[in-house]
Image (tube, one colour):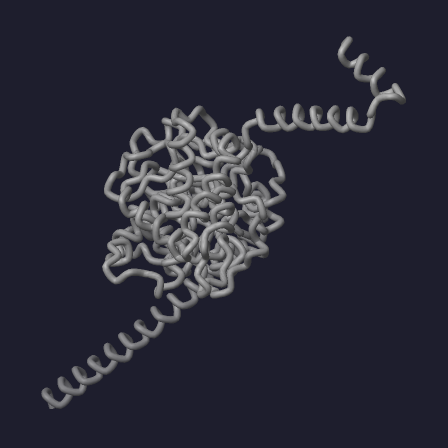
Length: 444
């Protein structure tokens, strides 16, 4: 307290340079505030997957082709040399490679403290090793994105692009929650390294191009405005693509607890219809209106389970994140309860591919929901489920649809049976006439 009082008296003394003292005081205060801000861990960090999720499915969470970041460093040695080659290729695109390297090292070291906290736990690596890892891994990712988007940059003997299996493995590993580097590291490096003149895309656009197969983006135009300016890592970029835009999903209205939606066949039995929602906005934009359940088409392929597992793990690790992907998995689990539900959704073009693997798709959503706790407070499709139950509860509407369906089936059945009986009567009459005519002439 004495020190503060002393400072106050000095500032009031006209003989002192109180303006300079005031500036120093403000700088000290700003430094203390910044220290407190830096001591708070970022809300969206690269964190470890909870053990209850990966205990039986390690292959869906741990890298097998390329390791990125500190959690699995040097656990996949086969790609380490290639990462250094890509690092050298990127920096050597102009004659100022050494200057670029120095700038990159300084830029990464400047945010080293922030990057360490981004991992949500203590990273047991020295400063030089940690900075080197971020630098090499970050430049490898940037060069990979560039060469994927611009084929003329690739070397003919490059093993990464020589087979589909390798690029599939790398893309698969880059969507793993534990296999990330902070996106702000990638952005800093992207603005320092020499980008070839053929590239007119931003870093986000390059990343979206690389993950286009996973995102099922058919439009060549990439809607950059959809994504938050603050992207935390590559998996978070994909998560933002999946975020729903539908008011019914975003509202998260809490209703009285009821069972989740009926399976697909039962929905048809109560008079509802299933239709694909043709929309590029979000795969999670489910809607139910006027007896129509509309669901954006979902492509079932080798990425599906890996992606959903890691997105769900991210939602569970970051408690403040809405549980949109986990809610979607629960919704689809209830909708696709039996193989015939899957076949119906395939016929309706709600599920793309996966033909002949109906049982595997049913099992996929069951596995995704193991150890996923979704209650009525964080389930994203409360309002839609309420509409479905309300539709079913409308007994007159359900009764009329069933009666009409039964009438059409009965009417068609009676008509068909009548035709058959009529033909049999004509046939029997004809045979009887011929028999009587034969007997009459015979006994004459």
